[in-house]
Image (cartoon, rainbow, N blue to C red):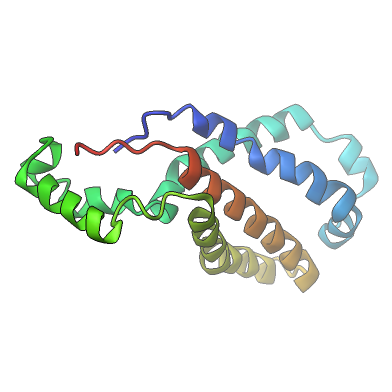
Length: 174
């Protein structure tokens, strides 16, 4: 199941760059630099085109996976996608699913910014934060260093998850 307006992913992939410009700039830039052990000279000599280009590429890959975490409709295809009736508009399966949606909002209730943001935050706390902290522990980084990055990803995943739920259009063969 692919959204009909897949191009929105290209815009949502800009969120980490935009937030990072503020977060790792005026807000926490100097603190992050100190905790990461990055000097001003290293910052000035960095290949920013490479860094921003790869950041955008990785952000795009990230946003293409994010619906599996924040959009419940993707779970429907996991449950029913192997059935031939899944692809048949008006099939008995879709009649039953539509009745459930009318009664409970099974696949339409959760397509809004707040829902995606909530799941984004939960994903950041229970998937991304442990990864960052495990790496930080082995790299002998400070808790400040780890919390700076975890905070960034909480914000990023909340915004990206919210935008994915709010703006991607998931077609279902109703």
